[in-house]
Image 1 (tube, rainbow, N blue to C red):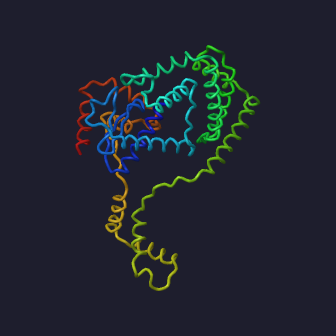
Image 2 (image 1 turned 90 degrees about the vertical axis):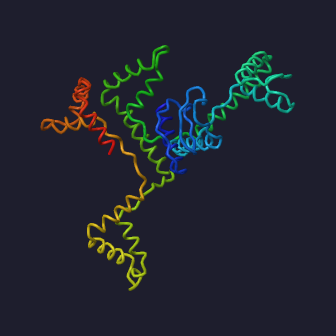
Image 3 (image 1 turned 90 degrees about the horizontal axis):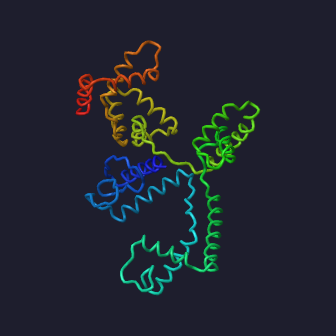
Length: 349
């Protein structure tokens, strides 16, 4: 869950950065509650308070960040809106008395308040008042909660997100096996047992799950095909910029040539250009694309490349990666120093 939220937060941050033309420092938030966005200067992480931050994000900045996160999560759900969970009985009671207190012009939580209550104290008092209600009065809130839950389940099913791919044979087997999970047995332990049983299945036993998997894959493909296409941002190449420039000139519209003939003539002229002129067009095209921050070369990267280049014939890099990592870990600081110095020089440019 945390990794998914971190991914969504990062994508929302990129969208805000592109929109507002600002640069945000990179951080790795451990939860969504620790992330703050600011469209004016940067993004920071907090633990319990924001008193240590050099700024406090404005309400507009927080609202914009939440909207960006919500839009990305809805996109991941296949365009389906998020359905809020229904209120439980005591929460419905709390809403009702809050409305009554507001109508009476009194502070929520007390009939004759002297000071404003903290949210925790107010929730506790509401819970205690709800518990003290007569049973017939409680039943009214229980019935309202049941009705809200029924409406929630209908809405949830209607807005069920479309998965990215259909269920596999293993997915379907595990789902069925968990309906028979013994009470009190840890899910991790049971999942290991299910995996062992799955490997023992014969062709006849697998056939049922294979047919169900094919049907589910076809169902998901049909649903995803009905979704509106997501437009991709494409940046023209140097050749495309040259064609646009040539075809936009008045000389290209003289002579009554068809569009296909004009394109062919422009393509022929591109082939006759010298390397220097072509490179100018390619440089212009590269300048129109957003810059991507390259990952810094580390000392270990340099050591790894050296060892991979010196590997024996027939060995794949993946076969020796474990050995290279163990060798690097066992090296002393003096042995690592040349690689660290080279990495520092590359970083300095």
